[in-house]
Length: 76
Image 1 (cartoon, rainbow, N blue to C red):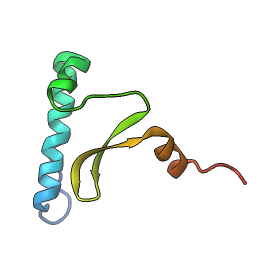
Image 2 (image 1 turned 180 degrees about the vertical axis):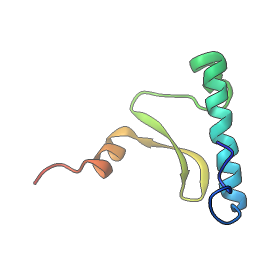
Image 3 (image 1 turned 90 degrees about the horizontal axis):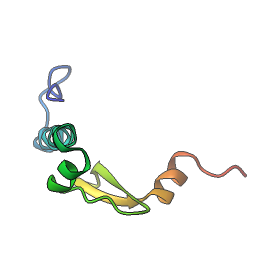
Image 4 (image 1 turned 45 degrees about the vertical axis):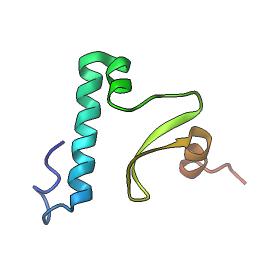
């Protein structure tokens, strides 16, 4: 939340941009809940989640099932 370069070396341009994007999304949600998020470019849809800072992109989307499988793989 704007402190990305306070605790280690100077942030990269990507880290700074990602920090700003995250702040924009939080502020949009605080001001207008889901309507604000949609206005900020996040359009939730069933079964997908917004992904921040992955694969060199500020934002993207991923199936929730894929995220769940990566975090909590099924027991063998």
